[in-house]
Image (cartoon, rainbow, N blue to C red; front, side):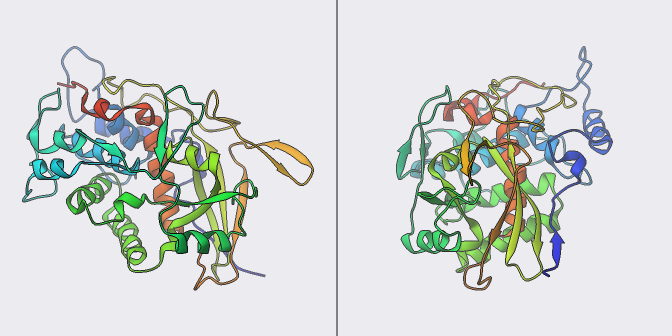
Length: 356
């Protein structure tokens, strides 16, 4: 019998983005660092708020207004939205990947160095798929490398790993845009943002795995989903929680979580202690975001907590998705969803919260 190794990224008490006592103390410590006259709490940006809801409670991020620009662009990179070629020139040559501590940009987001990272952008795309979401069309990449796609489908039996339905697509876990080297400074800033909220050792491990993938191990960053679930995944409608993997790396158990859709203004300041929506006992993420599938003879609705197992007969040449990258996905999908950024347009990312 194969030996299983636990690879859950946090305690079950926070598996549904429900707040533990440890996180409550973490947020209280963050809140008391700044005092805003006349307010009972420190208002913060929704993206920063989302990072604080899922970040490592052992790691204390600095409370600096300049980090908002970086956090928002990290979310945009995860969304696979890129800068135009002339925008990279506007960013300039930073002597440090992070802005100088203590420097506060204007609330309108007109800091030239970093606001340009959000302007004049278009999604990276090779096909357009429309789903019912109340927001509009979303352009998504459906496939870029035929060889990697074919290998992924072969590993997963030409079927969606969640629903077991055929006619599935090979999908990236870590965004394809952030693997390519056309925006190296921006990608470096992405990793710097992650180090604000997670221990350096953990982030370095994620980054090391990406470097291995760039060096020729792409299947560890691939998963097979139906076209509908692929679109849902790109919009952070759900996240996959890694549970455990066998020691021989031939089996990987994952857990499905719907992430409730949030229609939050990018200028809406939030109380750090405001509770995020829970994914517990959900059978959809909101209107139009549900999924039915047939397993055996039962017509079932996909629900939070549904567990499924991926398998491979050749962990060397056909490796399963890397648990570390799935852990990164588990965190950033939730940041993307609960911040409300999934519903924002590119120009909305410039509408910064005035927390002064």
